[in-house]
Length: 343
Image (cartoon, rainbow, N blue to C red):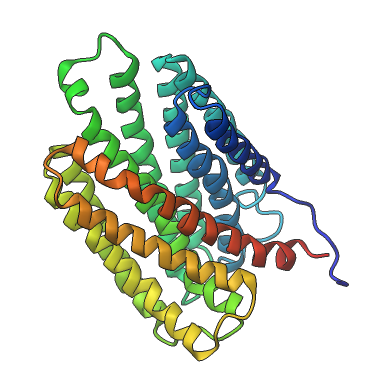
């Protein structure tokens, strides 16, 4: 309690949490009143809540690992500029989706991709300076995640043109569902999944208040190239219409996450079980993400086209979102906020 409070720099995440909660209630009570109901709810959580948290906390850990000075503009001013620009782009994206103006949605998606590329480049340059830590693999997870957000934003631009532009080419219109699936894979398994997976390598044992498994860094290092390669294969399979390739690729992603992050975390938890809400929430959220990912990929194996693949994924969204990503994110903040902010 004697630790002094420091200024909050992540209030935008809290705002989007409240907006997402209000939108969820509005969707239930006044069904059909919110434009693009499903898209809005998914992106309020993945972009509004999770992405703001990712931009903020990935730099918090990178700054610590790379020993950046408190006044280093990459971890201070530049990161704040990126977050503000990202949220303006998100507002433009939502406005474009609600109004059906594809020019606005493409502009918003392009801006998100540019910001993600800037974020990844800043992480890369920071990782090359004075980083003599065996935990450098965590920053590599963050860099790979930023790459997949660029990919997801690019695919989103094509999808919105297919949705709203009456003059869109026939090939783009026919590829809409395939591009949507690839976009979702890049966003959830790539941008969000890689960031959370990398963070859990160190944050999980810390929240449990035990030592990391001795092989945790080695496992995470080995899993990263497999995770990235399998996700690229899954996305390519979705775009080209090879649904079973997409399904198998996603299943390999889940396996890489389970072996590279889940097994060392489980071994640490067995050494000293979780005793607090934040630790339990982290553990259970990670478990539900693996369950939802495995279940969705197995169901997707039966799909004959991208429409069937989307239908196979939909029943798993509540488990992945609320039980998995939401529980893990809240658990992380439950531990981080008092430790970092103080008071």
